[in-house]
View 1 (tube, rainbow, N blue to C red):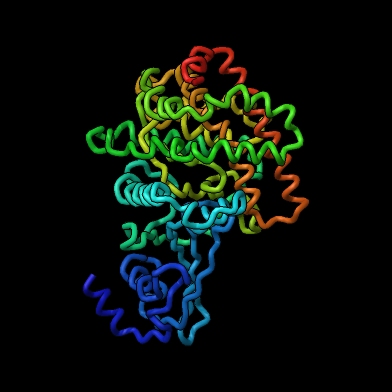
View 2: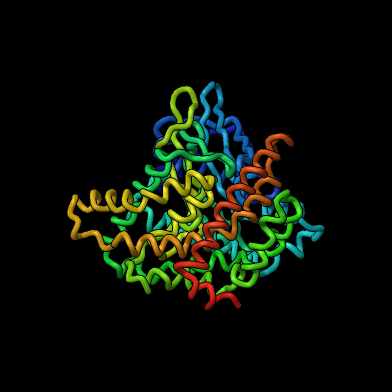
Length: 430
């Protein structure tokens, strides 16, 4: 470390070290260069002794999320045509405020309440904990993280400094449908992560990562208004309104969501795992080939703010509900649980006796999580289409896609809650 600091002092950068990388945030050129030169081995090898001419940063997160901005920073060098790119992820309220103000006339102070501030800070802290404590255990496909900065409200901004994967991978939009091959690749990664955590000493992790279990509850206050907005913009109100009316109490019952997140899988006798918590298209990066075409292989799972201890079926439910149309989701549901067990058995060295789950219990755990996820589709459709820069024709097509996906999911919810889980519905429909 001392050697790296001494080397930095000898490098004659021409860029202003106090230059801010973003006008609304405090991180400077000096902060980023220090991190690159101290923590990024690739940078050290390729450019460690080169004086830096400039660093420019652009926000590449627009329309992709609400909790952080993502800055792609380009480093250029004195007397060289070389450049180097790296990523800063800075938590904040900008995107959240933008979406909220598009749906109401509230000013920023009314949108960003103390509760929202504390919630967002907690999300960032959870992601730092994941990269610092759990990433090496789970071994998921993730970007290299060089430095984490804690976010202390009203005192210090938080940040994640990580490698830039935009040249080797691509994130699909919320309104892009998947393929069965992509679903199976995701399930293969789930099985590997689950095996890794299930074979880790529970004293290291069990009971330590529980805060994220209430993430869905934190958003329930926004659900009725967004569902109302969805109905106002939906041309199939005669089909949706009876479903919304039927489940108006159930879908915002906090006890129901907390039961699904904290207890349902335990009552089924399923061992917990570490859950990503937000496994939808915007947080899954797929590899691209030399022509820039998206492949079926996942190159990175990103945005671990909502990670927590939970059901082995929670991530699969969110992934299928939020990433697939009704046709593909239903097709996957006919075989994907068996495939998960096959993958998990393979991860356990083809020893079936080590697999702690049964097909029947996994399917029921999935249904609990599926119901919770389905009620949020209208909210995502409204929020993500509102922030999109797509042309009006594309937005219209996206809306129709989201409406169809929501209707198919809610039809299936109705079938489950009036059938197998009717007693569950009657208990929490209050």
